Amino acid sequence: MSSEPRNLTIAEAQREMREGHLTSRELVSAVLERIASRQGEVGAFITVTADAALEAADAADARRRSGSERGPLDGIPVAIKDNLLVEGVRATAASKMLEGYVASYDATVIGRLRSAGAVLVGKTNLDEFAMGSSTENSGLGVTRNPHDLDRVPGGSSGGSAAAVADAQALAALGTDTGGSIRQPAAFCGVAGFKPTYGAVSRSGAIALASSLDQIGPFAKTARDAATVFATIAGHDPLDATSSKGNVAGDVADALARGADQLTIGIPREYLSGDLAPEVAKAFEEVRAKFESLGHKVVEVSLPHTNLSLACYYIIQPAEASSNLARYDGIRYAPPAGTGGSLDERYLHARGVGFGAETKRRIVLGTFVLSSGYYDAYYGKAQSARTLITRDFDEAFEKVDALLTPVTPTTAFKRGEKSSDPVAMYLSDIFTIPANLAGLPALALPAAPRGTEYAPDSMPIGFQIMAPKFADARVLRLGVQYEEA
Amino acid sequence: MSRVSEEEVSRLAGLARIELADGEAARLAGDLENILEHVAAIEAASEAPRPAVGAGSFREDEPGDRPGESSARGAFPDAENGFLKVPRVLPSHE
Image 1 (tube, rainbow over the protein chains, first blue to last red):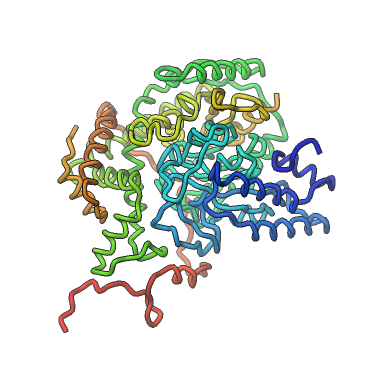
Image 2 (tube, helix red, strand yellow):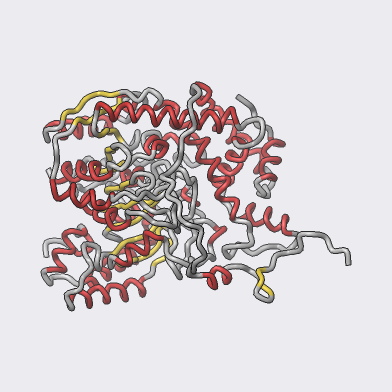
């Protein structure tokens, strides 16, 4: 075998297993050994489910021996962000509020991974309740960027991104509310895909901001991300926002068909401002590569882009303050109470159970929804959301897809922005618009797979966006880029 | 737009049922001030209809089994005679 099993892509591992050179037990064992040896430094996981993973790997090997394997994820080790419910396993959302909570059912996406034979290796670290851009807001541990331990992995799905980048899983699931899959994917040098809002069921995801949240995959390649996405996508009666369209089937067709020549727009608003020189240079090379692949690349304008960050940091805290009201210190195995009245128990549990950023956003959300401020903030933000969405609609009348940077800079140092909330929020500036408009968006490393990163040459990502439910187009462009 | 005082933060935290430690209200007031200064950019947005959210695929409201009821009960700290138990809400007149 040319490569250590843990370094294989999903597609390569399947080929090795099909040809009898590798078993799922060997692959899963290699990944578990990697987790054990790197957890102290990288800290990608909150919970590792080694015994259950080996049992599932043996079951996958038995299926393969009997000729009843289940498809491209059968026997493949996958990590799960710890705000997605896996029955019988702790689901903490990296909050002390849920430190003792054990999920009583599988999220729909988990059920679909299990049915496909995927092997769940553990639950990954995140910013508490998925609020943050560095995974420094976790109440349950530190995750570091595997390419430079002094830097953050991004967030909020920092554990999932670090796990895939460091060969501690072949793929992972994350959630993306304002960039929480794409920003850490860019910082860690892996593929991260936020599907169209409604393409993947959110049943069993711990809700943050329900009009923005979406579950999606991390993987080493866009092709692998497409495989995971096709497995978890599709209608679910348990999520009223889930679409009845056949997005997963479209992906399989698109990847089989290969690439068309498309018109790709670059929004000029994304290239002004504080783009780091190395990011600007890498993006220019990405643009040139798409042109060399036969696509027509043109400039477009999204004139309300400058409202995105303000719009997001009103709507997101407003919805979060409402969603997080359920953590009352009574349900979900809360931190030990002090007795007293019901109201005193609420106040105490939420005071000690939530971390600083969570409290900040709940109070901010309560403010923008409160009488006297609602119209000036929340009402205005809703208008802005419509304007931002219309910008995209108009752009997509002229172009098939959009190409942008993912982040203004590469991964920043730990502690660099943790005391300045606004500086931290600015790292999401290019990812937020896709959530506000519900669009599919893929973050992919600009450099080829196998590139060695170092503290002075950290990963740089780029982003592809397309109209709602054109997930297949986004993934196909990503696959074309990485395989050219 | 508006300035947020420490008293206002304490009032909002009370509405959100969050007990603040000493000095936390002052810190939060400073943070909110900075954030609100930044999000004041929203004033520039012209009026537009509010967006509709989601695909809206509703299902019939039919009773059915959801797994995990007993483990959900198990995550609750106290129970009595099959009921979940919380501290007294209304004062006792006995």
